[in-house]
Amino acid sequence: MPTICPKCRAVRPADTAAPDWQCPSCGVAYAKVGAGASAQPLASNRHIPPRSAGMPWGKLLLLIAVLYGAWVGFSGAGPKNLAEAGQNLSRSGHFGAQASAEQLAQLAARSQASDVLMYSAAWCSNCAAAKSWMAQYGFQFQECAVDTNSACASQLKSLDPAGGVPYLIVKGHHMKDGFDSDEFLEALTP
Image (cartoon, rainbow, N blue to C red; front, side, top):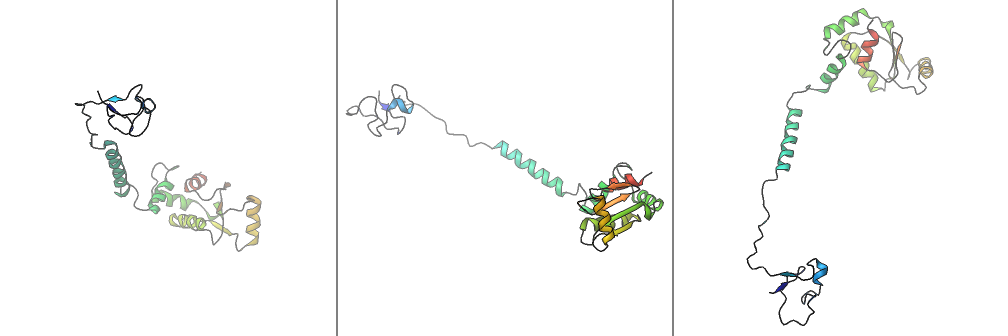
């Protein structure tokens, strides 16, 4: 029975001068290539089925999941814009899942300007956003501009050595980490 080299697949001729353990074509030792003591015999009717070119189901399912996520994200299931998202988040908390603009206006009407002191600066975009939110619902506040008033700047330094703005004091509660509407409403509510 003829012998086939496991490396180069050459058929060993019967009249070769190469030793029995070595392929006459590539010179490799049959045992080192993994064929054991002898190389594979030639199988005349041996059939190796071709690799199946079936559907890559894992990739298809991943694609469907990504497309579904994109559709949900862009379909309008969530807030239409970031301002609406901020309003919905800011109204949760003390008033329940969805405080109405009417409830916020009523709370603003009961509050006084002396209840809220805000240290701010003209260059601070977070300060502008906080002032805009409070004005939207009618909250009155006192403002101390640290960039134009040195007394305000020194007061803020004594309260917060880092001097970060906006810094609010709402009915004695210090909002050191900037403006948060939930924290603001909780501090303002009796």
